[in-house]
Length: 226
Ligand code: HEC
Image 1: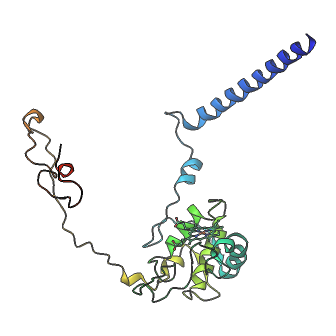
Image 2 (image 1 turned 90 degrees about the vertical axis):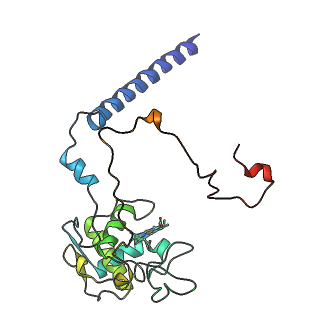
Image 3 (image 1 turned 30 degrees about the horizontal axis):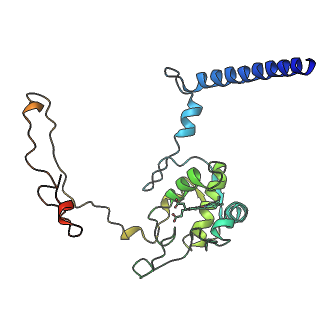
């Protein structure tokens, strides 16, 4: 009898704890996510991290040297990318591959393939290290970016990456990208007034009926639309 009572009391305590926890969770959520609450400037800044490759727009204040980058890289990145960016196990190489893009086995890396240096900051800042993205400080991101560029012989040993220097780095493969899109624009004017009555619209042909993707295998009956 006594132990049953204890169990009941214990359950009651547990229940109260759960309820308090739930109430707290709700309260926290209310301040953060409920519609109508204006996000704080800190919250916006936390999301607004994109950096434009072409000109580095969006790069934050801060800086990092090749030497500092080497240190951070060996601790936080080398496990997967190799000490010199050569790639460990099956994780991607970050350096090398020069002149292989037209080879039978191309090796696209930051050095051989990427067109813009600021993208390196953007990518690392939002996605690396893979198991803990967004844990590096701004200066650390600049530093590992400088180190990776140096591994690729794109910048000298005394290079310091910051919002002014990164956009000025010319990536070796930059000019091999086609920056003009030769495809014609299509101009479809949406109908806003006196449009066709949808009830009058008739489907006159279908991809199947037009044999656009004729099947060449399988029994004949299965090739026909049902
Ligand atoms: C746990 C393994 C791991 C760690 C640690 C790690 N990365 Fe990566 N990294 C990856 C994987 C996997 C990819 C490919 C992701 C993809 O393609 O979606 C990648 C991709 C990259 C790329 C893009 C490569 C390309 O050419 O597309 C860069 C740059 C990079 N990592 C930098 C870093 C830096 C800098 C660090 C340390 C701060 C780091 N990574 C730590 C696993 C890791």
